Image (cartoon, helix red, strand yellow):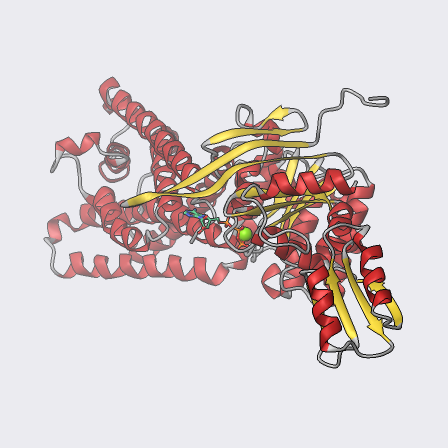
Length: 343
Length: 256
Ligand SMILES: Nc1ncnc2c1ncn2[C@@H]1O[C@H](COP(=O)(O)OP(=O)(O)OP(=O)(O)O)[C@@H](O)[C@H]1O
Ligand SMILES: [Mg+2]
């Protein structure tokens, strides 16, 4: 590949597996063979329903949970063999809790955590102040974290991770509980980080955020990888074949029945003026138009249904394909197959 | 690198102590009041002949008890809080091993409380008018290995706190264990020489209560003291390391 250099992938995870031991019961398999990679400048979304294993995956990458099997490489460093060298290259904000000392001020937190990374307060202070400014927290720099709002705490926790200046950043649900404006700020910040060449892995249940900032998504369900694709590709894959037709005259029941015979996945509105069809193949749209023409039905408009990422996600997790019945058990394989066809 | 880790953690301990000042002050007052109560007890009930020795005994015991309690238990409370706040996980993501961060904290903690103990002891001595004869070099020489043992115990407690989040009950009970360690003389229970810290306390008492000097202490005493401190320090570190491995295997660092 031209231009390919020797720089290692920023984050490379392969075949990770974790079963949490449980007393008196068989272990709980939380992550089962998850693998993905992320390059510098990439924002990768880690998606999946509650309990899918996102946090467990992130914690394994951070060295907070020991995997049963699999490999983790952070900037080419084997994180399982050399955990301290790997943590030097990553920073994370974990879910739920605020990852901060409540009895210290915003600025003291920044300096303290950098101290643990071996940096002197004098050396990091300018960058810390600049970050507080950038996060709109400058007027709170001497306020105790206990006195900050939840959103401010979240921003400060992200600031701590950013200040570490590591190549890889892991953010577990960074926009959870934030108001619209703060959420937007966090999104902008994540994009800026990627523009700086950093690698961000973020988990989120907010599909708008994912669609907005992620270049790629890794979807897991029940601990297994379901999809690992560019957001754009997934959108295209799921969007191409659903159409909405608005008719100039209502379909008669007989016409509707004809249509249903030709297209199993068609639905007609009660007034007979709207038809929605999910086509199996992209060029089926011509067949669809032909059928309507044969029925002499005037058509006012024919729109491709704009698919929201949320629907794509739902399909992936439920293991059913775009506009079709149940998918084969190997949903991830099926997605790849689809992608190669569409792409 | 290490200097900055040490500075950050000692600094943090001092800042938080200042912010928790009412807490610290009330703790000191509690100990002062306990001391006064016991003082009254021995002067009213005790044998007047032995009163002076008993008061000295009390002064030393009370100070050591305070030091053990704040040095060891406070780290248990701290770890428990950190687990719930998610900062414990952040500490584990530092390029330095968390045990060195913890050690830096303990240095700050024990150092700061040593100063407080001296102040409290001075206030207690002034109140009752009994002054201990302080042979400073000897006290320092005994304290250093003894504090090594204290640090080891603190590590063990930190390990327990990481694995078992609900250690409050244990911490409450441990107060009385520490009380025993601070007050029971080796002459009463010689086997306690193998227990952590007790040998050091005994030597402190020998010096501060009975005026024993360097010349009166044999090599066996020093050997026992240093071996005890080093052994419990090593054991504590090992216990902490095992606890940490278990926590990482089971994903316990951030669960509460
Ligand atoms: N320390 C633990 N011990 C035992 N089981 C755990 C532990 N942590 C997580 N689990 C279990 O592992 C599974 C995966 O949990 P995980 O937190 O990784 O999911 P998640 O994808 O982050 O979910 P959410 O969207 O709710 O945050 C769940 O069934 C959870 O109950
Ligand atoms: Mg989670």
